[in-house]
Image (tube, rainbow, N blue to C red; front, top):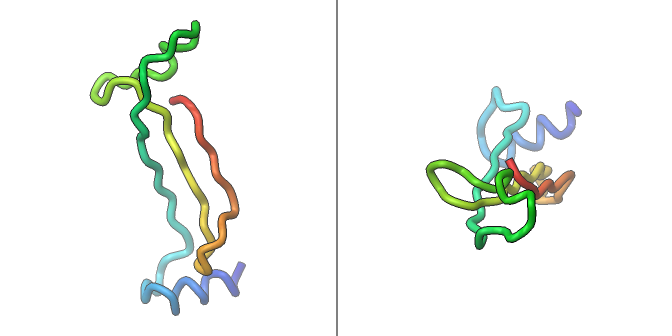
Length: 68
């Protein structure tokens, strides 16, 4: 882990950063299935969310896409 932290420091110049997490909303057409309530966001309509964990060398560690 120390190697990854040092690579992040070199890569982006943020010396106290040990990791970051972000996600995005992806708009979808209203689902016809019984799970449509899970996809509804009161401000954005029907969405799914995508979250990725990426190494400083731009390699994916994890990708999760699903409902709220």
